[in-house]
Image (tube, rainbow, N blue to C red; front, side, top):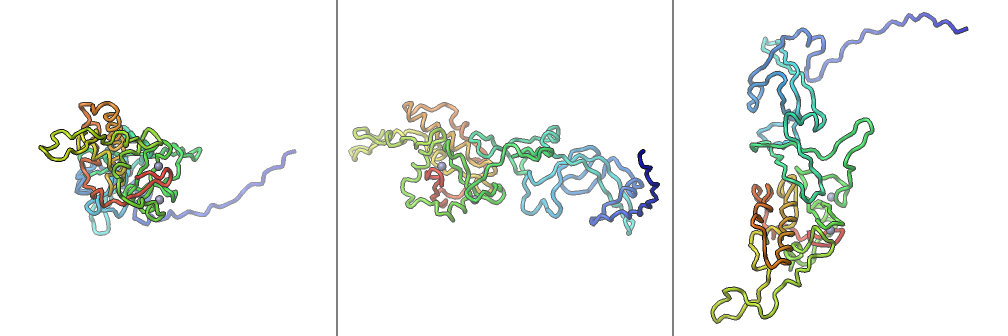
Amino acid sequence: MPRKSRPRFTVHKKKTPKKDPNGAPSEREWENMQPHSAFKGWTVIIPTVALVAPLTVLPAGTDPDVGRPFIHQFWVVKIRDIRSRQDSSGEDDVWIRVQWYYSPKDVADNTMVKRYIENDIEQEDINANWKDNHPEFYCRYDLECLSRTLSPKHRGTCLCGEPYNPDQDVMHFCPRPSCRKAYHRDCLAENNCVETSPRGREDRLLASSPDSDEPFPLASYQASPGKRKRGGGKGKEAVRSSPLDALPEELLRVARLPITKGVRAGGLVGNVRSVVTARRLVYAALENHGILPEDWEDQIVSKALKDTVLPETTDIPPLRCPGCQGAI
Ligand SMILES: [Zn+2]
Ligand SMILES: [Zn+2]
């Protein structure tokens, strides 16, 4: 026979709701507060906050006028409810109830979210500066809550394994297929990944190919005896010319840049795609009698080259890749 369960006379202790440290109203208080469809004057940036509007919110303590926050520092929310109560001095004390967005899919209807893939050499530009006209959000990973997995899988960055923090770090990227990895400038310097001599560095950078683990054979396109530079001077000694000399200066300048990224080095995405494209254009032109596509300038343009004032290349330490030992 099943045992009879004893009657229970447990008296539940009355729970006193914990007070929110920021003074947020309790559920019960909220019910009695005055509802509104909008309110004005919350911040200078968003003068009117309306119900159900998408809104970007900065972490507490961040002043948007100081230190230029980046777009990824904002949370995106949808306003669900606006209510007010009177504070002790009789002033209106307005609170909003928000729905937090957690995934790019949630935010997709309201704002642009781009995917940022760290080792993608074709990565499109992302304008992560919210003060520009069209700031863009981006995501690096998807977090599957149930299976507690990140996709794509996080691969260690640099020698230190610390992830790339675009706001603080300056990264150098090696484009070679077997490397395709970014390293912190400081970590490279600390680990003595510095070229012994900067001589010929520009050509070593140019020869570091995104499509081959072997350096591009620039030497076979160097000046050959007997060729004279066009307009080589009247009566002066003939100057040996190289097919490289016939290419546009701007294209060569970009192709010879170290590939860098980080807010202080060309922005979140950096100059990866520009430099990789410029190198490919140079290689193709050398193999194809100097012929370049008409739109070569459009192909290499990027935010990093357009908007960023970068230090002179000569001020960048002559770093080398810890993997392939190439110039980066
Ligand atoms: Zn590092
Ligand atoms: Zn490398």
